Image 1 (cartoon, rainbow, N blue to C red):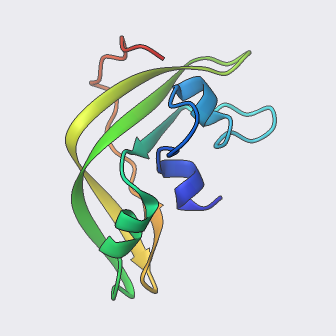
Image 2 (cartoon, rainbow, N blue to C red):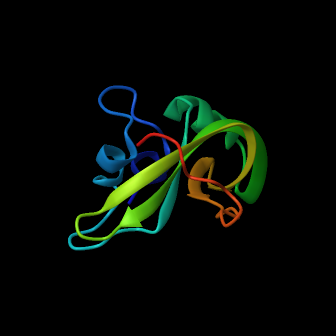
Length: 111
């Protein structure tokens, strides 16, 4: 799956975790947690311009979606402002969003 589909907030449509995670989860699977960057894909791509095979760190507003139920897959959201995220760039394109530490977060936010 491309990083845009997996980690960039949709420009149109629902921004509820349950809806966004349908594009991330496979058939009969519920990913435990996923981070969505609140930034246009073109701007994230521009951060990797000229980078061949390296990581960059940048502050983003993000939404973390954490699984609360498996059948059906249900998620709680946590919005974070100015969160540092590490992105792997290959051949000038973002290919991976580094996993963060989520265990200390309180997911009482609205789906």
